[in-house]
Length: 290
Image 1 (cartoon, helix red, strand yellow):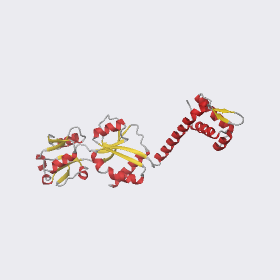
Image 2 (cartoon, helix red, strand yellow):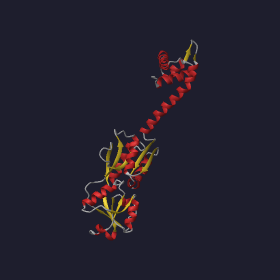
Image 3 (cartoon, helix red, strand yellow):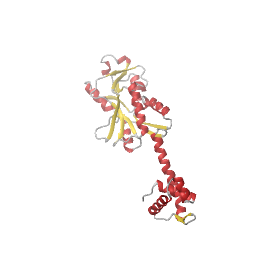
Image 4 (spheres, helix red, strand yellow):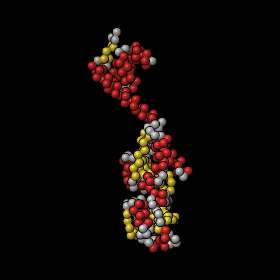
């Protein structure tokens, strides 16, 4: 069925005015062109909508029944066009983001606040989770994009790097000098986290065996254990700006691979105007250190 906006509008106007002459003037169409438009609509529907005579136009029973549907379709089409225009103009819209906890607690909130001030009609929804969770959310469409670490080969997702968040040694101040920390227990995140394999690889790179005495699921727990002098850990550098590391030091270490944080999206990439604008602002803030 091939029904156009123009045909629906012409039918509704004729039905409401009861006159081809007035409708022709309103739509700036000749009467033959208007009659042709209505006839094409009737042909597409397989229904006679209007009964014409020399004096007036009347709706058929089918026309009266279809009028309410035609009005609804016109409203829906007009609403869709308005929504598209407002989304493009960033006067409305929703951005659904997934993010690693460190990103959600450090550089993202100030960026969201700055974006919301510029575009108050666009809602930014933030959902924090582990790398594996974010991967699943992006794949399922639960979020539009994710701020996460680089995924494994074969994930099928597009990854656009934003910044490096390399691992650092986190240790109590009184054990930060020299190699004393090497003799402390290893406090590790659980194996299902994205940090754990990187931390273990970094320790092997330093000639140490990554055998943890403690395994916990959250970085906040790791920091608390280190703060009490129960061992050392390797965490992303961003942990210093997120958690209370009082009495602790972060020390750069050699590591076999950099940890890149970036934007995860499905392929082919089709970014909404709102997300594109937010990412432009985020990149600008990251580049300026804001």
